[in-house]
Image (cartoon, rainbow, N blue to C red):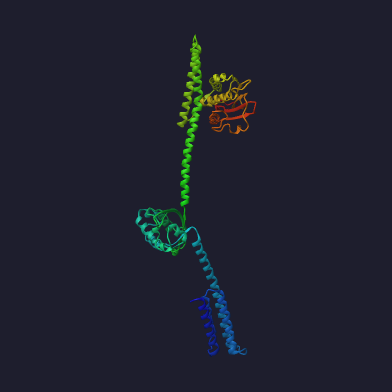
Length: 504
């Protein structure tokens, strides 16, 4: 019945009770029947209708009493009128109170419905009461339930058919490619793939009384395409309400695509890193091996000149051949060190006398420096403690520093001098400085001087100083540089003493 109809019949009933109360000699509390009119008006679910009906009934009750008895009679008619008014008042209060609770429920339902329909998250309302009965019939419970279910896939397939879908929101309809919610009024089996494992986990969580369960699976669209989703299932804390299970579903297709793109980018980055590492290694090999090869060529050319003289100077030839052999061995040792590095073998840690390393390094660069008219001055303290490390690596550091210093002064007028000083910095550290009288280093270049592939030389690879610093740090030391433009550069190298020879 419509609201207008309810209002009409409520008014008709109230008027009928009024006429009976006024025109008949009934002694009972006929006015109490006004509560029926109020209850009828309450069915409109409008507060104003209830209040108007109650007010009208009160007016009719008082009017009927005054018409029939006036103000002179008090006794029982007045008592009956008061009872009727009390009944009307109590009924009105109860109806208004019920109306407030009902309105709150309606508003809550409307709010829930708006959220259900408007959210972009897929929502499925399901009835799992049939699943409860099926689980209760199983012989295995508790901790053994998962193993039992894993061994009985037929029960899982049967259980999927018992999880009945009650309703779905528009977001899930779109996610599944359905035209309406009516297409879902079956069970969850049509939404899950044959190899789905998430339902087993959800079933165990449901049987163990958990309130929530989260997981990841693939939703099968109506066109057969699979959509990766994250889901959260909310179970009621009371087993009697298994008909109200909510499943919230989020489409993570874009996230999966982003993850795939990230993995592809990481693979490309790893490939680029391998290529870069290969490039660095190639540059390192070229840089390290080039020096002894250049020395071999220089010595070979010198030997040929001594042989081509009218009277060959066999002593000089023997000397140059000795240089060739020494440089060849040095190149071989460099290659050996690189192979050791590639095999991830530990570098050699021998007890070394720094004076011997200085002598070997200066001998290797003597001819190179002499070619550019560079004077080398070596100043060492007596009785220097030993260091522990790799002879060839430390030798290469000194050779690189000395060659760089010589090249920095090449072609410049005036005195060309390199001063190599070795001393004890403190009771635990050995200090080596290589100072040249060249043009110095530009202040803007100093912060990047040890960066791989940064070079200030034409045709340079920019690997020498980077390798030197890495080598020194691997030996527990430090390598730094100071320079004033126009006054040369000074490289400071520190190495820790061997523990067996630490100073007191």
